[in-house]
Length: 68
Image (cartoon, rainbow, N blue to C red):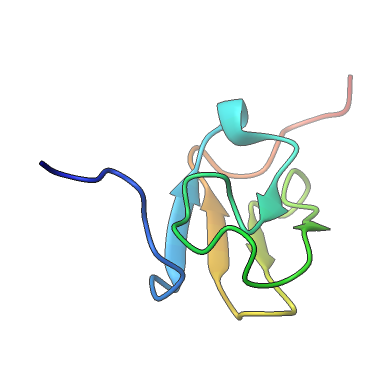
């Protein structure tokens, strides 16, 4: 049986607009409670770095062009 959850050892994760608002750790991580949940602002720059575990998130398609 294959487990589709990711672990916190992966340091580069690509996310989509469906994952917003972005927070780390993500629910799909095996160690989802390894550090306090922190929301990461990724919409403006297209990248975010978790201050707790150092995971770098990149937004597929890049930063949002404008605000709604």
